[in-house]
Length: 463
Image (tube, rainbow, N blue to C red; front, side):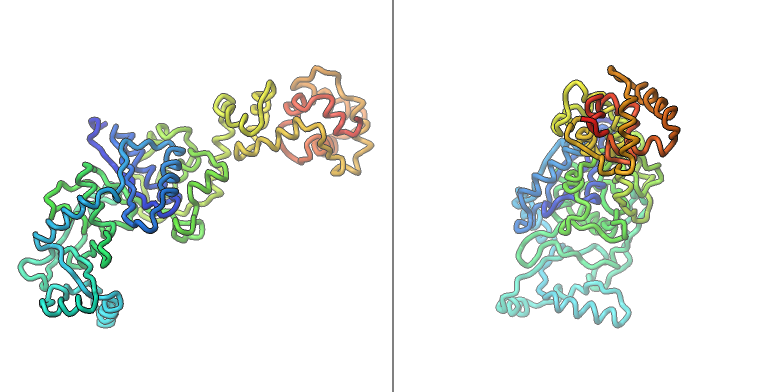
């Protein structure tokens, strides 16, 4: 166990939609890692896209994380840090590692296609560095605004004569990683409209906020080499990196916030348990057994970054149902009493009811269905038993007197078996259908005392 505050991680969502299960996986990996190391967790909203970032999504992300049990020790907004970014930009310009480019997207696309047609890597050729003052003035007269690229340190003296420049790091998940900066284009850090891309604000924030470990999706592996070069250019200590495999849909497609794919918001609306979601999101695609843990603290005891696969993992909601069922079946009444009350389930029978029906529930929201079966005097299922009305009428006459307990069902059905000769399915199915309207469900030995003598008579067609 490391010393307190030696580890500081961050989760940096863009509030342009509700977080989906893939985002949630990254948030949970960071949170569990911080729990294991007695560290800190920064929630940093990447809201530099002012147009698409919305307060409702900021609120939604905060609510989703709190519901999952993630409690940030620090909350930051990139939109409040533009002055800081601007200061760093001026430094990078003064150091000669941030340069203006005037190519249009179509011009860049044409160059890429030419390189590919020549079977050359489509790496930006730094043509902007060759522009004369007159050419720049002509572009500006056309109304062109520059975008700004970071000059990667992949040359000795001449930026047009790149050499193999390896960036190494020991990835917490993937082991030793090597990227050749000569195989990568100088990244655009600032758009034509002067807005920032993800890369630079992220590095500046990680430096200023003292982030020690960056745990994120493995689609950022190449970005890491570029960001490490920026860390070095700013004279900052490099954080450690861990790149985890991505989650896909059951069909293997990518997840999208814009499409609302498997958002935590939608899964909450479907009344899944937070620990079912957390357990599956964390353990799928690892060497750990996928099972439902009752708390994030318990899950942290079975979590390790090195157990993560290097291949994408498919998130199947059917697996979520299995884990949710496992959690619900194990829940004591004390843990669900308040939630049941909000569903209209309360009173002296509530605890007994929960203990009887929980083994037949997938979600807690399924409980009102059985509560109605127990408490609604107007329910009548005789239409499902038209061919058995004679048997049901006879069954009423053998009903034991109250009070009833778990032995009542056995006493009753034993008498019926003796008197009618029925047994097995022929005996039990008509009674279950008449009393519950279902062919399966909680054991009638425990359900019968909850329904009570009067309601049983009514459903068998007497009252």
